[in-house]
Structure formats: structure tokens, C-alpha cells
Length: 573
Image (cartoon, rainbow, N blue to C red; front, side, top):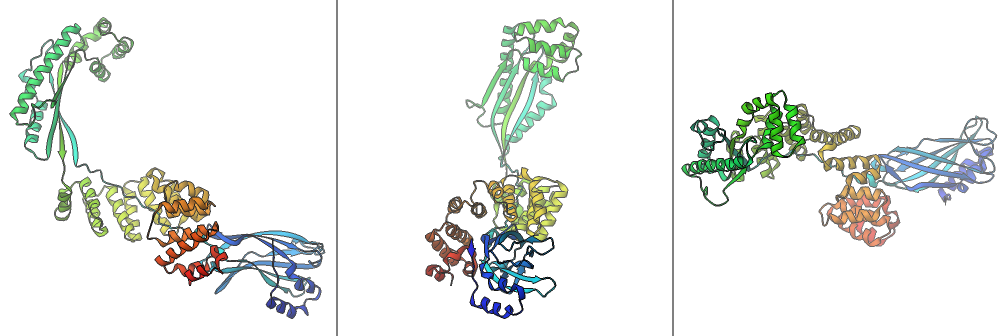
């Protein structure tokens, strides 16, 4: 508890008013005996407000039994002052409903808050009181300073809410498989001419032919899978599936050679697999069929693993088996052919050139990718605008237009682009970006709503919510949202959450940076932990990078204890 005494000016004022005080003379004369305990001291701003708690203790025989006292905390600063809500107290003989202070002494606690403004940084908290008895004129009791300055460190928060670029899905190498299927007659392995005349086989051959002469397509390998249906003797089916594999291999090898596919005969290019009894294929076709007893047959498959038992039980379902022989088994007597290729897309140089000379040549993913190949925001914007124009239903293109506009400081235009993107698709990325707009516009409530509804967009949203929580004065929540990723705001949240060491460690992880405010915050952390070297070293770096911080530091109540430190004075002068 801090007991404050009147200065000479206060005593002079008291002398002037004594003659008119009547029964209040002793209260005016002895005002310095009143004790004030201010918490916190200096007072602080949190969530955009300055809140203070003052415990006032009146000594024995001070408070006139008939007096009514109005006490008003006032924050005074250069160019003005702001009053807190006043409190009315009364002596023990006053008939009213105010807080009673006994003639034998007593105390009262007061908590009030006012909106913070920047001019309050360098200020004084003063208690101003007046007293009166009945309907006589109020008598002023000299004001007493009870605290210095306002801690405004939370206002250092960097409100750089991050927007999200919804990236491209460009793949320079796109794998593809050319497929065809050859069917066989029961117990046969030769490939019929009718199979080779099928449209799917012709298309298969044409694709291979095209790929063999196209430099943008690389034929990687081929695979043949041959099967026998699961009816009949296993040994016969095993031999049959092997022979079908051999006939298919001969066909495919001739085709690859004819079409001049490189490396077709290199070891490992062509792989084969044979399945004697294709129960997996049988099950799949049964599940897709309309055969009346298919559930019963599927149950047989699940109950028995022995192929011979399975076949016997299925054949016992006579009517269904007749359908199976016609609709299912012929489709299992087959060889499946696959030629795997890589489609090679445009090079970076080609994409850049096309984006400038003939952007219509590029598809959506290519034009979105083109924008990532430049660091020039004006060029990025040009490309994303083309992407949006050529793909009017692409919310990604429109969102990315907004993203670049935000980077260029064109908030109003960015907002329009984000709103247009949201009209196309209301997804989490767009909601986060609209939240960043709301924060720039000063609508913290709307920003928080949008960020909270955009949690699926990733860690960027957590960072943005951390900013909101600092602004709201909820520093524990802010620390949790920022997590372990170092940033200035993360360090600020840790400091405001009374973890000085963690703050300094986090800021240290940023390394040497050009941002003066990082070093300024290190100095503040040093002041809070009484580390003089940390204060002075980092403050010197901060003001060297940003001279305007000199004036701010001189006013900053964080450094009140350094006001007489010669090195500190030399840094900020």
C-alpha cells in the first residue's frame, strides 16, 4: 500500500479553500492521510480498455459523519483527461444509500474502466474528490496522484491477419494407364481375331502408337494379368491361365515392336501374373449382378475357403449356376493388358511464355501454377485475373485474385474478389480471407466469427485467432492458438501471459530480423524481468532500426524504472 503526501501546490490550494470548508476543514487539511492501493500500478490496457482497482483506506476521525464525498479517478495526459465513473460515499449520520465510511475509519474498493486511446500512454492517475454537508456547496479536496502511466504493450500486436492462397493442382508428370481386355473361349488360350477387332483393343493400339512418337509421353512399362474361371480342375486352370498369359504376351510384344516402342524387350519392362482360379473376380461380378440367388452364393464364398468345396456348393444351386455359366464365368476367362505411361507437361519456361503470349493455351491448373513462377505481385494479379476470366466458375482463381490484392494493400478490391469467390463456393479458405478483411476494417466480432468457422483451413486460422485473442485480452487463449511456431505475436502473447522467459526464447528463434518491434519487445521483456543488459542492448537495436521508437520508449510505462538510467536516457534522447 502506497501512502501519498500533498506537495506544496496541493497545500496552497488547501489553504485557499479552508475558509469555506466549515465542518469539512479537517477532511481537506488531512487528505494526505488517506491511503490508496492501486492495482495494477502502472495501470494497464487490456482488450482496448484501461481497467483499474483502487482500495482506499480512510484513517480514524477523518471522515466527517455528516459529509457526502464524491470520488472520481481521472486519467490525465497531455491535451486532455478521461474520467472514470465516480463513486459517492457518506458519513455515518447521512441518511442516504451510499457506501458508509465510519468516523472511526474505513475503506472501500473501486473497480472501473475506460476506453484506451494512444495519448494515455504517458499519463497520471489522479483521485479527485469533493465533499459537502447537506445542501451546502461542495468543497473540493485536493487531487492526489496515485499512479503513473498506462502499460500499453498489448497494443503492439501486429494485426497482420494472414490470408490463404488456394494453390494449383498442377502436375508436370501425370501417370496414365492404357488398358484393354482379351476374352477366351472356355478351355482355350488362343486369341481370337474377333477380340483384336474390338473397339477397346483398337483404341489401346492407337494410344500406344501415338505415345511411341510423342516426346511428351514416356512409355514406362507394361503388365499382363491372365486368369481362368474358377470352374473345373485346378491343375487344368493353372495351365490354362499360364498359356493365356503366354499368348497375351506374344500379342503385346508384337504390338510394341511394331509400333517401335523403345525398351519393350528390356528385362523388367513387361511383367506377367497368372491366376488359376479367379475367385476375387467371381465375387466382384456376383456382387454387381442381378442373379436371383446371388446372396446365397456370396454366403457360400464367405463360408468356405477351399476352392473345390466352393465350386461344389455353387453347382448345387442348379438354377443359379446356369445363369453363372452364361453371365459370369465367360468374363473371367481373360487377359488384362496395361501399358503405363507418364504424360510430361510444359516446362516452367514454356508455361511462363504461354502465360504472356497465349494464356488460352494453358488449362486452369497450368495458369494457376504460372502465377507461382513470379515474385511480382502485379504479374501475379494479371495471371490470376486471366485464370478467373477463362474459368469463371473457379472460386480458387477468384480467391487468389483477392489474395494478391491484399498483398498489394488494396483491401476494398480484395474484399470484392473474396466475396465473389464465396458466391462460387463457401469454403474455409475464403471465410478465413474474409475474416482478414473484417479485421482490417476493425470489425473484431465479425473477424472472430469468420475465423472460427474456417478452422478447417489450417494453422493460418489459428494464427489469426491468436491475434483476436490478444486484442480481446485473453492471453492464455492467444498462446494456445499460436502454438509453438515462433512469431512476434506469439512472443507478445507469452509476455502478456506472464511468461517472460518463453517470450525471449520465442523471439530468439526468429534470429536476426529487420523488424525493429521484435527488439523493442525483447527490451520490454527484459524490463519486466529486471535484466538491464537485455533492456539496453535490444532497445539500442530497436531505435537504430526505427528512430520513432525513441519517443515511444520515453513515454512507455514499461520503462518507468529506467527513467534515471543514464544509458537508457542516452538511447531514447
